[in-house]
Length: 134
Image 1 (tube, rainbow, N blue to C red):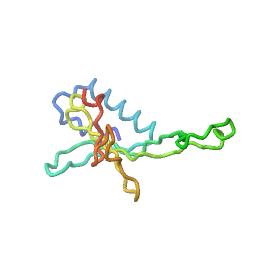
Image 2 (image 1 turned 90 degrees about the vertical axis):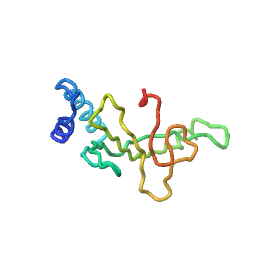
Image 3 (image 1 turned 45 degrees about the vertical axis):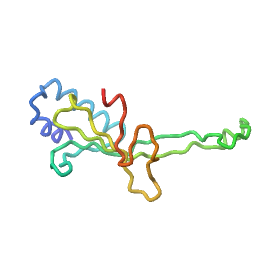
Image 4 (image 1 turned 180 degrees about the vertical axis):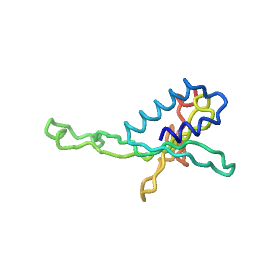
C-alpha cells in the first residue's frame, strides 16, 4: 500500500517528505482501523489520476421508539441495535491535503438508496460536509 501512495504523491510538487510521511501515516491508520484498501485509478471523462481509499464503514444505530410506547428496562434489552456497513470511497487528488478529499457513499445492494432530502449526501452519493469544505 505504501508504494502506491508514495508513487501517487511523487508527482505532486507540494508534497515534501514530511507531508508524504504524514499522509502515509494517516492513510495507513484509516486502512488498518476500518479494513479499507487503496488503489490508484483514473477519474471520469478527464481521466485524471486519483488515489481511491475504499471499504465498508461499520455503524450501529440504536432502535428508536417511533411508536411512542413506553420502554421498560426489559424492552430496551430486547431491542438490539441495527448494524450496517456503509460502503465508502474516498478520492484524493495530487493536491491533497491542500485540496479536500471527495467522499462518496455507494451501494450496489438492491433496495439500498440515499434519502433524497439528506443534509450531507446528494443523490449521486457524494458527501458534502462543512468540515471537508474548510
